[in-house]
Amino acid sequence: MNRILALCAAAALASCGAKEEARSAPPPPEVAVQTVTVQSATLSVTLPGRTAAYRVAEIRPQVSGIILDRQFEEGAAVTEGQPLYLIDPAPYQAAVDSAAATLDKAAAMAAAAKNREARFAKLVKMSGVSKQDYDDASANAKQAKAEVALARAALERAKIDLERTEIKAPIDGRIGRTLVTRGALVNASQQEALAVIHALDPIYVDLAQSSAELLRLKRKLASGALETVEGDQLRVNLILEDSDAYSQPGNLALTEVNVEPQTGAVTLRAVFPNPEGLLLPGMFVRAEIVEGRRTDAILVPQQAITRNALGEGIAYVVANDGTVEDRRVDVDRAVGDKWLVASGLKPGDRIVIEGFQRFRPGGKVTPIENKSGAPQSAAAANSSGLL
Image (tube, rainbow, N blue to C red; front, top):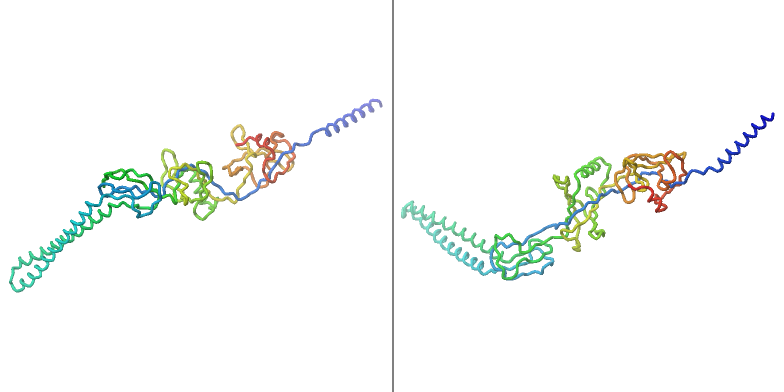
C-alpha cells in the first residue's frame, strides 16, 4: 500500500512539473509578413547613351576666292537660307558679263545663219543655188543654234558661281565657331569646313543594348506578356549628367539592323524634343526605356528575398499553421524598391519581410501582416541579406 501511494505521489509531481514547463515555454516569435498578390507593373530598362545632333551641316565653299565678310555671330541660331560668308564676287561677276556677251554674239550668229538657210531654201527650188549649198546653210544654222544653247548654259553656270559667293545656311540650327576669318583664301575643293551647324531640336540619343535583351523584349511583346504603354512606340525618359531628370519624354525611333561583333550590342536611337537647347551633342546621359506593362506581375519587397550559399534566391513562406518554409525563387529584375518574381511564389503566399533572425526554416512563427510592405525598422531590413 505504501508502495502504491509513493507511485501516485511521483506521478503527481511529474504532472505538475510538465504543466509548469508548458506554462514557461515562450510563444512562437512574431515576424512581419506580406501576402503575395498579382498587380500591374510598368517595366523599364536603363541604358547609357550619348546625345547626337538631329542634323549636321558642315559649311564648305563651292567656289574659290577671298572671304570679304562673315555675316553671323558664333554660337547663334541661324535659319535656312541665312547668309553666312561673302566671297569676293568681282571675278564671278566678270564671268557672268562675259558669258552674257558670248550669248548675245551666238544669238546674232544664229539669226544670220537662220536667215541664210531660209533664203537658200527658196533659191534651191528655183535652182538658184545647188543642193549642196543649201545643205551647208542648213547645217550652219543648226550649229549656230547649238552655239546659242552652249552660251546660255555657260551664262547659267556663271550665275550659279556668282550666287555661291554668298554662302548661306543649308539648315536651321545653331552654328559653332568659325574656322576662317575675313581675308582668308578658300578653295572649292578644300576639306576643311568653314563652320558647322547643328540642328538640336529635336535631338537624338544613341543607346547600346545587348542583342540578347533585345530578343527577350521582342518575344515578350509578341507573346503578349508585355503590353506597350503608348501605342507601338516605346517611351524613353532621360537622366542628365548631374542626375536630374530631363523634363520632356522621348520616343524610341530606330533600332540598328546589325549587331556590333566586338560587344554584342545593338544601337538604339531615341528622339527627344529640345526647345530650350539644354541638350548638346556629345553629352553623356542615361535613358530609361519603358518597355511595357505586365498585368500579372508579382512584386515583393527586396528585403524579402535573400541568397543561400549557392547564390539562389530564397523567400521564407509561412504556412497556415505558422510553419516557415524556405522556398527557392527566381527574380527577373528590380522594379523600384521591389523585386519582380519570375517563379517560385504564387498569389496568396505569405512571405516574411522582417524578423529573419528570430526563426529557423521548419520552425513556427506568429505572422503579423504588414499590408504596406514597407520595412518597420532599418535594422530588420539590413539583417535580411539583400540580393
